[in-house]
Structure formats: C-alpha cells, structure tokens
Length: 83
Image (tube, rainbow, N blue to C red; front, side):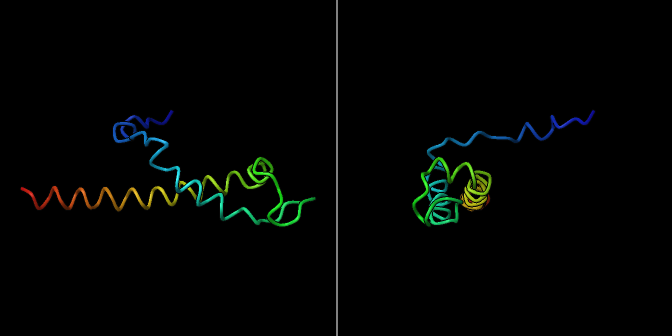
C-alpha cells in the first residue's frame, strides 16, 4: 500500500468563497455548449452540469489553482524580502 501521508501535511482547504468566481466563469464557458435536444444557450443549468460537469469543475480548479499560486508566490516573495 502506498503512503501519501507526507502529502497531506501540506494540503489546505480553500473556502468556497475563494473559488466561486472561478466556478461562475467556468460555467459561463459552457453556457452555449451543445446539448442534445436543446437549442444553444437554452439548456437548463442542471442539464449542462450533467453533460459538462467534469469539464466545468476542471476549468474552475485550474483557474483557482493558477490564481492562488500567484497569491502564494507574492506572499513568499514578500516574506523573503522582509527578513
């Protein structure tokens, strides 16, 4: 069995408020995506999530990770120059 406990020490839970805008932006990307039996832009959100949920969550996670990495980098740069 593989031991991943060393990775868990560095894991942090990000509050939903920190990623909601990334999620909304990702949803907008798929608003007009083709869904069978619906005209473009007319499918209910639940149907779009059913068809494209994985892609929406992946896009939101990628955007959040990139944005948060920039914040962490700035924090690290600031901490490195203050001492």
